[in-house]
Image (tube, rainbow, N blue to C red):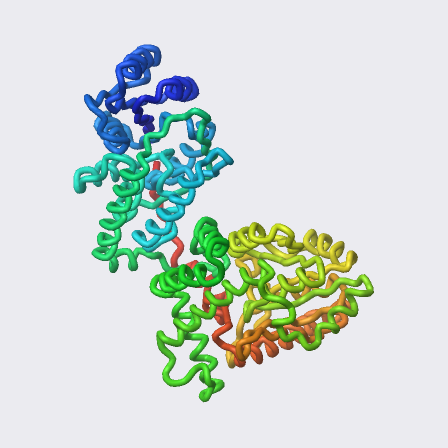
Length: 574
């Protein structure tokens, strides 16, 4: 990889001196573009170019805009034979200590665009920050993807061959709309975007050339053109959305969406409450429904399976089709909004039917902890939130993947007083058992989902009948519950007739037992769990939130992986 630096400059005098001094140890060729600066700045830039032999100074006779300056630098670097260019703003906002990490990422992904993902401190103007949220939203629509997490950061590494191809085929905006437009159009062109977190500050006394009214009008016009450009490319973009490979376990799939997307929903909740959040949520659910072919198919397969058991099910009338699946997706969105309501303490325990709550209160009152075996059916999040608000019970939730991290991170910000403790692990092993044993001894609750295997549990599952077919259930939760040697309960929280109803069932005083017959006891426990999960899933099938092939067997995954593995040859790539 041959890397150059590109720095656009318009009347940044003090900041550019400091920026070049910090960049000097890298000894990279730098294309410093004077975008029609005043005489004092122009003279300074000429002196700096003499001081640093690795600086190549390019002059614009008048101010054309940041986009035009970056374009001049990128094209000059490409013409001189460089393969990549690192854009750095001249105003001192960027943390240049992150450059080595960005270079390493570009070397690992040479065809991708590497962009900083800003982490702001208190110096950021709130108007600029909220404006970014709006732009993020439109970029996600224009790309039909959440791959671009931030489109306005001017700290990025361009793959120059693809960038030059774009310059030759299309005219781009030359001012503050440039950073957004080039990123979207490179994405349309097939360039992937990788992000690295980076600190961004707004220096005291710093100069900003963002023209509030003019640039916002310019950016709005650009988004309008990009939106219609997206419509022309709709089939191509939908096809580009990569579907889950048959050899990929569900838990290895990256989370669709991003922290900032969920943060936007949470911010809208703070501003306009439940109904504004709902107005934003429905287009998001529509996007996931349109682009999530695998999730859509999994929904249809599940609902068809339920209908085969219950042909007259009131929620599944007629031939199962896209309308049933869309209702399934909408139910998921509504449940998410109810979770936010619950964490903000707007749904009270009195609004939830919990007829046998005392069954769980008794062991807790004696200082003894318990295990709750739960599932991804219904809305356990609501029950957890309300229990914490009302009883101040410490709840420890096992999270086997990062897929829940962003949502829970935002919920924690909505209610900082939450006593929820997320314990993220890659697998349920001895160290996890020791940690949770302490929680149980302290009289706390340990919540473990028993209906999802992880990529680390392949081969360590028990197949149990579920809706007429054998489905894989992880051994780990049941083994762990046995090691903890405490009462075990099943809990389901379903929305029924407009109200939430908590179904709490005593499962066992303990799952611990002698080594003899251990596997038989394990299979019996999994079969009992599967039977109760099936019972409640058949009652409320639209509240089943496992949007993947629940019945897929490990051997099918392994066989698909072997089939898709690259064939070995005698060729050595150098």
